[in-house]
Image 1 (tube, helix red, strand yellow):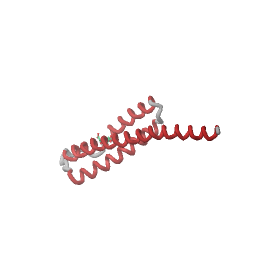
Image 2 (cartoon, helix red, strand yellow; image 1 turned 30 degrees about the vertical axis):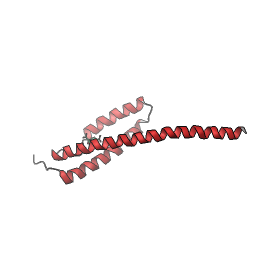
Image 3 (spheres, helix red, strand yellow; image 1 turned 45 degrees about the vertical axis):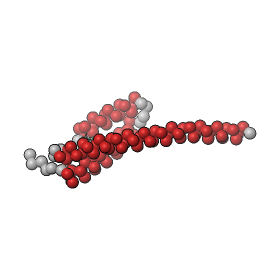
Amino acid sequence: MNEEKDMADARTILADYRASIDNIDAALIHMLAERFRCTKAVGVLKATHGLPPADPAREQQQIARLRQLAKDAHLDPDFAEKFLNFVVREVIRHHEQIAATNGVTKTN
Ligand SMILES: C=C(O[C@@H]1C=C(C(=O)O)C=C[C@H]1O)C(=O)O
């Protein structure tokens, strides 16, 4: 029956989209893991040189850059900014932890 075939076709298409979604999610996890590996090293560098965990000027530059990249890619720039802020908050939390355990205190 046609309805059954339509439904079977829809399920095939859905499974195909989901296979791509699974690959994309795996790539996102690997990219995030690599980014956090890098930012943790930045946290150690900052802590051992008495640099502050957060750098608001750098964050503003990144927000502007990512908003433009999002616009060019037809992704909502507000979403891109929220996502970056979410990630950066976690990075700063790591940096504060690293500074608390390995940090030097700057006297000047
Ligand atoms: C990684 C850094 O530390 C913090 C985290 C940032 C990030 O995750 O992109 C950017 C600026 C800093 O607030 C850095 O200073 O580069």
